[in-house]
Length: 376
Ligand SMILES: Cc1cc2nc3c(=O)[nH]c(=O)nc-3n(C[C@H](O)[C@H](O)[C@H](O)COP(=O)(O)OP(=O)(O)OC[C@H]3O[C@@H](n4cnc5c(N)ncnc54)[C@H](O)[C@@H]3O)c2cc1C
Image (cartoon, rainbow, N blue to C red; front, side, top):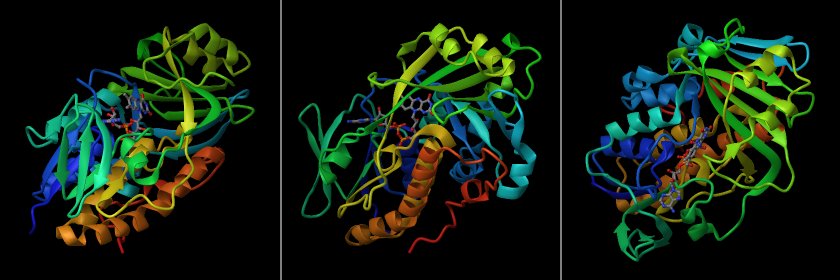
């Protein structure tokens, strides 16, 4: 086997997952992350069975389960009557049907689990990538400190504003959806008596610009709440921007008392404007490719952003397995052929925001097997 020298730009969920998968094949992989330290930034990551299955085989199962919660069901309810329009059993039923349960976890906890699995010394913090470029034999990464390093393969896992994507496909700006997303976490004992706190529940609003999603974190001792409101003209992005909880409660004052009780239990909230991009036709150029939000940012209405990045990571590593440097461009084409149709469909379905509003089948999302899907 040829030992490849690989750069992963971005040490988020997708970047670390692909690095772990490629290191397991014996490659020399470096992860370049712009942050100086991870910190406990962000709130939740939803891992449906398709992603848990992928991570289990990467050897992360035990570490994930150490801090995650395991939702009992996936429920849809109507905003005013609380009528239940869909209820899928998860947990043991999902394990039986898909080979893995759903796990919901603090973003910091999954990053910790991934970081612990990386080969020692392979994560480079405070390493801001500014550009990637093709070379005669592979690709190079340019850094904010002026340095430049050459690799056989460069992977852009650098999020929605990916400089790697810009380098190979030119500049383009994500589109503001006109929606603001709100996130909060509260201790479970603040909401005694509320039904189904151990389930993943989506409260569907009268229009698709308002919804509340809630699920357990940290073995169910904490409850996560996500909501959206329409807001033209406020387009700031970030994971630590404080929101006004009174404004959020006010926007949901016509919702069912059980939904409002979720917001009443929150004492602080963050908010971030929701941006999106259209599906792309290609993700790769020669020895440079993209994965995760760098390739296919999506609105969070199917809660599949992290799951798609994890699926990408496994399929990309499988496409590269056993290939020589000269074979990499063809391997990257095979990777994107395997992944673009699925991620584009999920980008579009997320935006349409109708999935599982009523009865429906989750198999096409949860039953995907990244370790065995065809790569051609
Ligand atoms: C700080 C943060 C908090 C988040 N919190 C939540 C949350 O609470 N809930 C939720 O559903 N989703 C959250 N997300 C988004 C979610 O994690 C991703 O949508 C999903 O996991 C896809 O992962 P990804 O690896 O493709 O992208 P990301 O998770 O966005 O990871 C991209 C990584 O690349 C790094 N990066 C970006 N530019 C550069 C550069 N120029 N050089 C080097 N590194 C770079 C970023 O710092 C980041 O670590 C968060 C993302 C971030 C970055």
